[in-house]
Image (tube, rainbow, N blue to C red; front, side, top):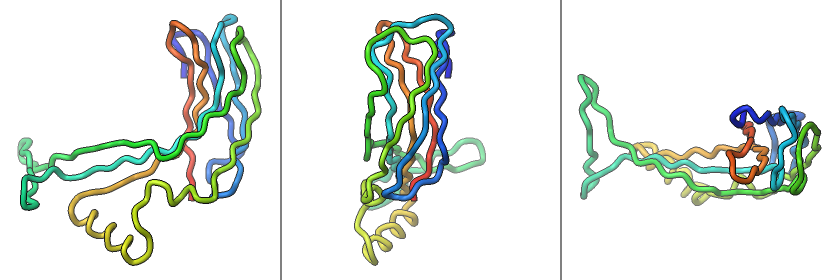
Length: 163
């Protein structure tokens, strides 16, 4: 992603699918158009859980909105961070062009974070959520960020799969 013409950051990963306990290996490539002073360069491993639910009015009655000939249920969406790991790659300095390797361990218990009960109870809860129009999705990503004082940060975000 470009930071208003300052340059760009790329994230290169060996692969995109990981299991708990595996190591995410990659590198961050920095290529600025001119030397740029920044406070830090870091890589972030992030897990966000997005919950969507139908809005209801007492007694479980769903609210429907009519748009033309289509009825759509109003959705309430919330997002929460269930995992965040930040690794500094370099400190305050002028950045121009460089390559920074990194390794991040995927915690062994990562799939249980942000989830509800397990077993038969968990399956029942998921079925009730599905039937009521409620759903949850967990997105995992690796993001490189160059923190530039007094300006927009330069960053790049890649989606990864954990499972």
